[in-house]
Image 1 (cartoon, rainbow, N blue to C red):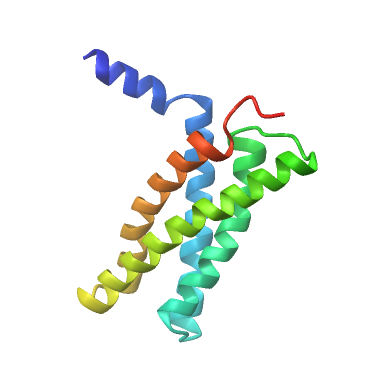
Image 2 (cartoon, helix red, strand yellow; image 1 turned 135 degrees about the horizontal axis):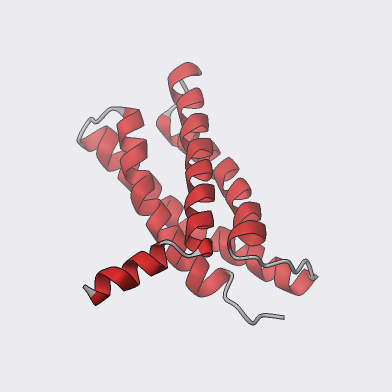
Length: 141
């Protein structure tokens, strides 16, 4: 029971709630751009996924920096570290995203929207862990 309380407290912290809100918005950007490019423009899933990733990462960087982890510093050293770290970590999750989409679309032959939603669940988890533990770590001047 104590573990459940600790988990509940963790999930209801202001940081976690804002991460979830902006994570949902980032996911909507990602899925909307992917669907628009793939389903409406008929671009390949690979190109659609890369563009969706790029736009979602730019959106996520600024919302995570300012509203989730409250890193207000725009000092060049801090900002550059956060930007490079954020995009570097997102390259790792892009690899997971592309591999997951390949598995779901080319191997399993799943519907593209369902595949994107399922893969995004794992990507969001990886992104939070990397952002929390490495990129926007507290006590950086």
